[in-house]
Length: 138
Image 1 (tube, helix red, strand yellow):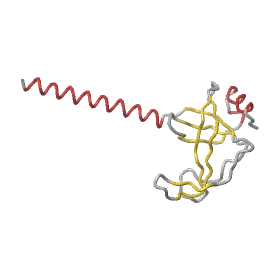
Image 2 (spheres, rainbow, N blue to C red; image 1 turned 135 degrees about the horizontal axis):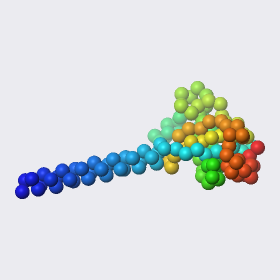
Image 3 (cartoon, one colour; image 1 turned 60 degrees about the vertical axis):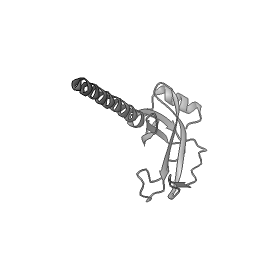
Image 4 (cartoon, rainbow, N blue to C red; image 1 turned 120 degrees about the horizontal axis):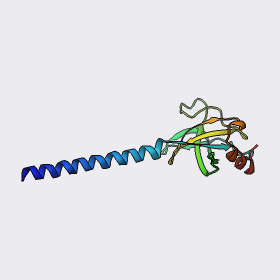
């Protein structure tokens, strides 16, 4: 009888570990595994810095929030959002604001933007570039 109980406990523990590993992998993939998207900062985009606040309500500093439509190489659209904080603020994404007309490669997971970089128009896949130009890109 003890062996059966121990076996059941062992199976239950093993099942719990498997569920935790699967949930952890799913969380990691949704949060950190990113895909490439291409976007352009529109020529009329407002670059006025505004105060940003943390979850605790404390001021984080001035910055610009970029909310842009981006496209993958197949032309599938998605909204991307990220902040650039004022130079010298101490935040990882701080520095000069991204200027209007700039093309960007945005790396985005299902949940967030994991990074971005400037790209030349020539580096953008044809379908994405066609859609960016149709929405008013330079």
